[in-house]
Length: 340
Image 1 (tube, rainbow, N blue to C red):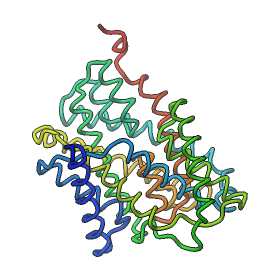
Image 2: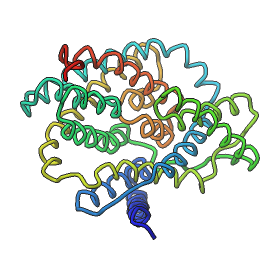
Image 3: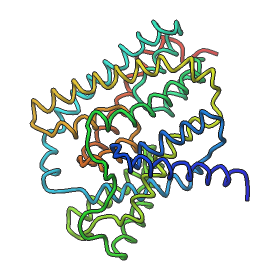
């Protein structure tokens, strides 16, 4: 057995154990938070861990299909309120970026570009690309962003405070032929979206295909637990494996900034969610998850875990990344992108 598979099986074993413990103690979103915390702690302790991209992609397809099964007439009707929510989200994301950059600079005395990119509420691949181009401290940015993602994964369920039976199917499960059609369609659409560089393409593709099938009542039923539950455990494990091989000194130096950024992000996101809930009457729980600046995959899965509207949540997180693509360059030091 090759080293990569030994590390993968180790990560999955620790993730499964973390999920079991979290479920037994009644932790919110146990099959996400349990593996994320357990695998992260193992990585901090020096255990070598891995999760192949192929396994990650399979989990994204499965979770995406599962999210689409939650589409209801009520969620379709709520689309009319989305523009208001998007506008407030844009303001909240911009505020998190600005105040977060000031906080990072004040705490660590890092230069402007490093502070801005470390404070970005998401869009890690884009942020790391800009870090390389602008000669920012890529290591510091990576560690802060990884710690922020882990913290949000653990904090958001506590703030919302429900949904311990994450991923448990309720109602009639999908027929085998319907499930096969949805998975095949999810893979095809996901690959197209990957070509278009859409974030979390396979997950979004699965959700769209499944949502269309359920909205038209062509593919009734929910995802079977034997598929859904491992999908959540893999996603939680993936979050923890981000810390594989990270230097402990780098983790300690970035911990303070990541803690402040997480608190700032949760606070401003909660304010934005409350404003939209007041203006539109949309459920506050759904809005809190939609505004929390975690990973697209993680927050969309969190919506399923906490009985929120996954389509609404996923749309907001994709919008957040698109907004950051436009806004971040405005705060990067002028001329930095063209430096030799």
